[in-house]
Length: 225
Length: 225
Image 1 (cartoon, each protein chain N blue to C red):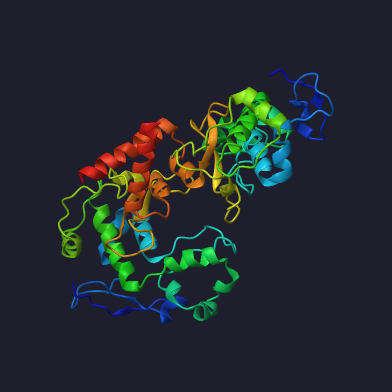
Image 2: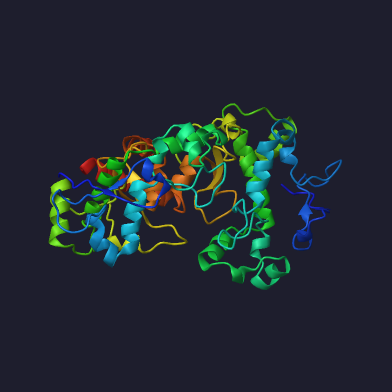
């Protein structure tokens, strides 16, 4: 799809690094929108819509700030800047431990990839059992990006059911559905999906392939013992 | 083994609930000792010895205090007290969320079970590849409790190698070997073992049997897809 692509001004100090852009089709009518595909979900399920925006564009991060945990959630494309530029934004990479640095640098991703991730996650969310309907315009938008909306979205890791209402059954602030990465080090639309929280935790920093090999080895040994 | 069983006075405010006892054989010579089986490890590998004492006798707990995380590490037998008695020790159960309460109450265990857990963990630690030798007296003590020291201790969960030096390769305060429970809700010597941190995290609050069933289901679906 060719997007409108016009800049959408914001008050964010990060706008100089990367302006937000309109992702309606070019020559669209009406107001520019960065996330037009989330318009319906924003009305009916704001928390899900916010989660998709957040997980696609922000690094994960501790809910508190500490030298150990690294900086709090930050825009993924900001994490592509070099250390000197980051310091201008108050992020002192040199104060962090090496393993924290490599972990947060891995989360960096360019703006366009993040938007594609958001569209993919929206496409997946609408195919979960129990998902709400969406308008014809959004349906066509999503189909043009990632194909027909006829599959049942399952957990990307355990491949079992992933009902839409698991988005709401959060306990102590921890959603039971998490955005996951088949390879935890790549943030793009081919590599993301939704997963049960417990599956995402179990996979850890392994790739999905490594995870399957690992659990196959466990079962081999368990069956022999 | 029949223990000496004499009380070992301490300054802990919890002594009234449960005095610490001597676990040398009855009619032993010399000073009473609560953890005689850890004497050698305390000299050669104090962190391992401290970990065994801590994991066997204390609840796990957040490293910080918050209403949400529940009280910090506390003696497991203290958690067997009722809410009214706990309040006398400054632990206000009514201030905690229900899911936190059930989680910490599950960690309660009587003193004697905790000591048996400590002996079992010591027995397992000495059978890890690369473990130090121990004195003949401790060897006999451990054998009398849990049998010959001729096995190779493996991770209780993945059943793969668990070298003794993984105790030392802690990253950011997180040991790579964790004490685990085959059934996470029972703290006794038959139910405890050592595991890789990643295995313990993957198992979560499932029993080991549930965990194996769960990952078998994942592989079934992955192989079909």
